Image (cartoon, rainbow, N blue to C red):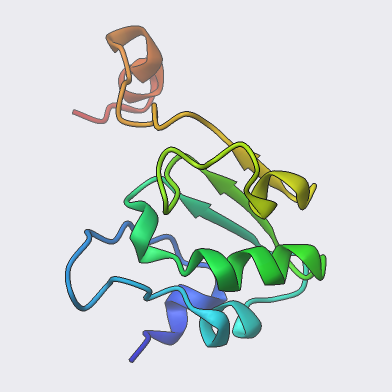
Length: 109
């Protein structure tokens, strides 16, 4: 089901479809390297939240999440307590022209 490059650390931004819902599940997370960083700025349901919470609680991986499932994440959710996660309030898509300085520096249009 997975391209092995995804698990080895090659970046991928997945849209939410019936095929990608829960794509990052317990098996996927177990195949990530120890202390790997999972970044989800796409759609919350791409990641199985329960499996991610478990992996983070075991201190096997770390995560940076701009989106969660459910969203907003309830204040009492276990994910807040793992200590190995950075959660931002779904603002990754809000980038101003000033935030795109690197495009000009590296000639990206």
